[in-house]
Image (cartoon, rainbow over all chains, first blue to last red):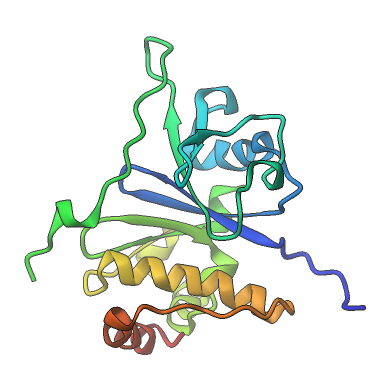
Length: 103
Length: 98
């Protein structure tokens, strides 16, 4: 048997606007675990975050694991944050075509 | 995750990719930036801008970093590269010593 590694099995790409967070995780981790990892990076507590699996448009459930929700290696997950009026913002991931460079 | 364990890579169009330092250090160029004694100004802020690397290429490179770590730990999957980005990707990889 191979020795145990610190490295976790998969990574997901969490996207909001023009930013992408590469998050290493394990299929047995819950959505809440992922939000806790994001907490410091996005500067927002977990209950202000909502994660949506982009391929199915499904909002991820805090208590369910990634495997249960079919979140696989390299999956793209949209992050939305709670606005001042306590509602979540719309999913928005910027596309590179909207920002053509001048070179 | 702690901010100081990550580094932000910025593409030509200003898209930002936040990756683990450990993953980014697959690139020798970035490793040198992050570990050289003088410290580059960019790396002190944990941010490196690549004005010559376009967004899709930089994202592919970040995916490669993680694929490379997975491969090194014994998970043998293929790394898929679209033919139309091959040349640009090779040029960026050459620059990054990846």
